[in-house]
Image (cartoon, rainbow, N blue to C red; front, side, top):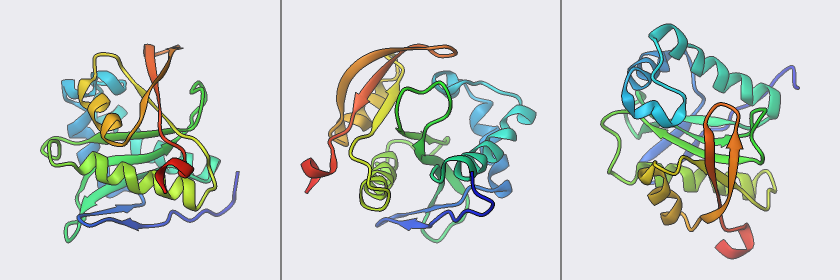
Length: 175
């Protein structure tokens, strides 16, 4: 754990990945109020959803990496949360993506996840990454496939039950 930490800002062609913050709480609340969050621990009340931006920042402080709030260039309103994740109970470092309502179907998850994966490999020196995907979450499986990931093994998570672990290609395979 660090007394201070820096969350870098990443940019892609269309997106900015920036530090999550309190300004993102309304978008988290709207997202977690929907049934779309069945795969990620929701639905949640606004009070419980408020804790998510705090949890995302806490992960950065505790692990030195985490997930970014994703925005479209020129607009600072969060459209999702994407990045690197390894809370207690996860078997390996994960690359995860959650897009908020209205942001799906545009390739944003793939674009942002690719930037986060590049950061993990190029800046953190990681050699492997996984994504935990509910077997019924065909949208996330499609994003993982577009990123070159493939099903690796099943994992029994204490809250989410049976989850598929998808393995991303390592940095040597991406050059």
